[in-house]
Length: 366
Image (cartoon, rainbow, N blue to C red; front, side, top):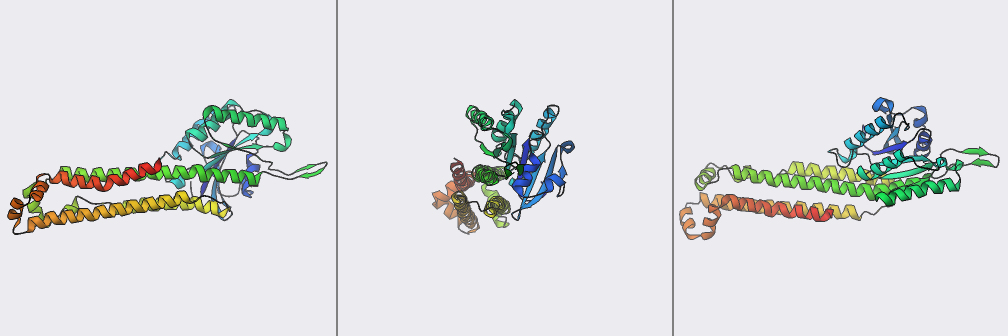
């Protein structure tokens, strides 16, 4: 995905009206004229357009229509595309597919098995916020529309998935009674934005909580590994202190990587909130506020732990540098115990600092 913005997928069978839908919803003519910035996917099966919508960048992927003779390849390439840009990939969240529209011709009065499969997999397996759009509703009877909605609701109940359903007439039609205007845009956008706010925000939280946990676990294990591999016997430590080579070389928090992680999280959330703000969508900011508070708590906890470690290191080095160390060693059981299991003491400090932060993240995910 070439530019930052919200990445949207538009899918459906041939003749369902994807281009008309995109032009109506996003106020752009590029989907009919071929203007914009097309990026071809598998043999022209998927085209990507970057459009300016309400002064915000949208990357809209308009797929080729599904046909009987192309479905196997179409499905394979689509799933490959989604896997590479899913919440479970290693991609930055700005590279994800953030949401999708699946279009069904309301006049067909039924959903084919392949469509039911796609809707279920996109929403459930790939966890993409999805809105199902019934198109050509002006040409469908109320009974046909109800029939499709009933099928979709049965699908949701059977497979325990949650999708939004809306109706859209993308093209104005002249009739004997006059002009039948387009409709459905406002409701469709509102359902889509609600889905982004509720589902995408949760996915962002889970993603960054997992990345954060992985970062802290790797940090903890890396430091403990260095401690365990180091020769911290009493004579080596005395030599280390005399040569002014202190334990900070071994016990070191990677603050630059931690700051980069925080910045990525902030940038992704701001991207989502900025898009919702531009469209005048009112969302609950409590989730973001609580995450900011948690992040601040963890940062303070790590800082406090780092200070405790520094004090510990200074006390050990000071004891060895002191001229009266042997007298202190004989007189102080605490110092003797500390030296007897120096590696264990340092490892314990590391656990005391990092593990509470990891526990907070797990609790927050729940």
